[in-house]
Image (cartoon, rainbow, N blue to C red; front, side, top):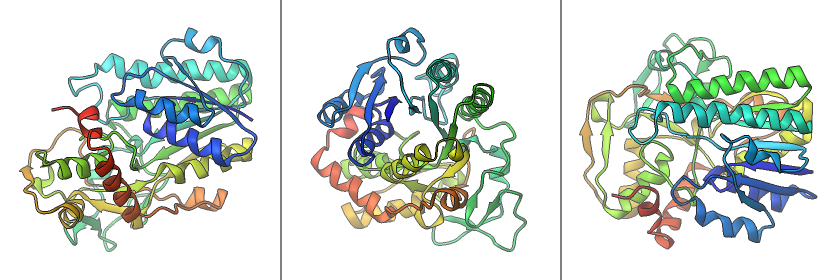
Length: 355
C-alpha cells in the first residue's frame, strides 16, 4: 500500500508516518511539508531513517502535488491547527482559509486523479461554541465536571461529545475551515467513489510535540512550567477549571491503520479522543506539574476570550464499536513522556515558542 501524508514533518503527521512505517507492513510512505512550523525541520532525519520519503511542498500550491505518483491513501495532517488562527496576529484570516480549506481542495483533486482514499484529520473545535458553553457543568476537584442531573443536549453526555453534537456556528475560523473541509471531502467521496474517513480529534499530545499556548497545551504547559516561564489561566474567572481530553498520536495511528484496511467500510465521520478517563483541567495539570517539578505561581486573567469553552471531551464509542479500537496510552503516561522529553530536549520550548 502506498500512503501519502501531508504535513508529514509536523507532530501528528510524523508520528503517524513512523508508526505506520514500523507496524502497518508492506507499505511505502511519502509525504510533504512546507516547514513553516517552528521545529518541523528537526523531524526530517527521523523520518528518512525510517524509510519515509520527505520532500518540500505546500498543499496550497496544486503544482507541488503534480509530480507525486500513484497513491492508495492520503492522510491529510497539514493545517493551521490553533483555534485562534486568523485572529492571533501571526496568521491572517485569508492564510487560515487557504491552508485549511483551499489546501484540502487541492488534496481532494489529487485523490480524485489517483483514485486514492482520504483520511482527513479534523477537530473537536468543529462543535458549536454556544452549545459547549451551555453544557450543564459543576466544579469538582478543581475542574469543570458533568452535572448528570442537568439537561444534556443531543450528542453530549458525561462520557463526552458524540458525532451528533451541534456544529451550529460560530465555531471559530479554524473550526469553520475544518467543517467546510469535511463537507467537501464527503462530497468528493460520494461524487467520485473515493473512501473518505474524517477523524474529529481531541487534543493530541506526546513527548515530541512542539506545543504553544494555543495548540498542544499539555506539552506547552509542562515545558513552560519546568522552564520557569510565566503561565496564565485565561477566562472562567482565572481558575484553570477548563477541561480537555488527551490522545497520544500512536493511538490515533492504530485507528487510522484499521480505517485504511477497512477501505470504503470505514468511511464516515468519527470522534476520536482520549475520553473522560484521559481528561484533565489546567488547574489539575498544574497540580501534576507542581508534584513533578516544584511549586510555581500561575497568573489569573478572568477575561473570557472569543471561542473559549469550558469542557471538551470526546466520546469515541462509535469508532470503538466499528473498529474494535480504544486508546491504550493513559494521560499519566502522556504527561510523563512529555516531562522526560523536556529533560532531554529543554531547547524544544525555545524553538516552538520563543520569548
